[in-house]
Length: 438
Image (cartoon, rainbow, N blue to C red; front, side, top):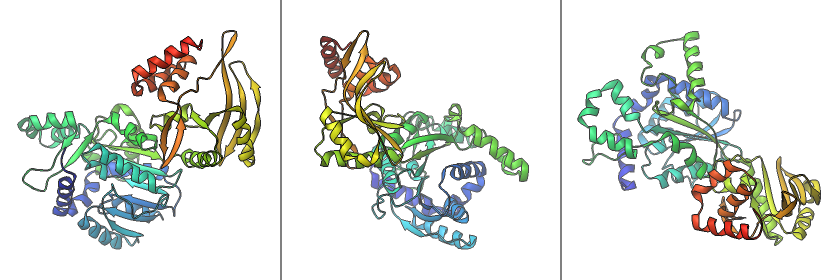
């Protein structure tokens, strides 16, 4: 892997060598700009929300959002691009809240939860190491408020071939080994002699959503922002009025179709910092302070591990006496008091709560029906996962997978198994069988 300082210098040199070219890129690729703005309009909170444009370069999107009434801070690695952004903002007659220079992997100058939305539309192109890409996404996650959107863009794995096919097909032939290596690894390292040249990571379409999930973001949609006109936009770019709006609309709709995502040059992941995470963090703090032993279970436990599971409510298991203590602890949030309830498939001491709109179920002594008898929920293991700096108790993933197997939730089982320790899963399965749980 390339030294990150070498990559940083290469990226700075690239943009210092021709800052005007970066401003003009959105004129050359007018559809990409229009489709991206359409996505921002659809998913941003209303103006004058506070927006961090991290890696916004010469300020194309920052200025457009400021014109819509947003309070925008522009942050970028390149002093030259920031200087151009100040000039372009003045020419457009808009004021940005700030022009900050730095790297997307370190947003420490900004407090937690300090922006209503974050644009990360550029930095991920130039972070060759996966850990740094995760760090940039994690920093965006940290500074955006709960419920706020994060917009992250990626250059696609085959963008080099797409570009060559449209503009210089002979180069791909002459540099066949380099192109094959890039398609296999995604890596375009700095030029060895220091010449200002493009340095980038080309992401495979299938890795975009999992990478965003891995830092705690929900992924609402992924768009191929060129739509159907990737490097075929010459005639489209010349259109105006109704004809132009027609093609923007067509390409915006098609941009959502995952079947085109490997055949465009850029992907935009529209993500959101889940509201449930901040609510659960407060609940867990209360449980810990009261000395209540618990396990977060079900889909929430999987989402806490970065797996792509939507969280609509939270299930927490604990001992019977603790469930009633929990009711007293969170009395203001009770919807249905804790009581023993029995249904066709499950029985337990269960109470239902609502915290800031998040539904939470507290369960104790949970049993599942198996034929003509009741078998207890396993609940014998413990693991700890991180929730934005706070430890949260969950089951071992292998036990969680067994629970899905017992209940016939095979799609969830399939999601868990690639991340399980096979030997640990086998041991827990044998114990469960020996105890009559299957």
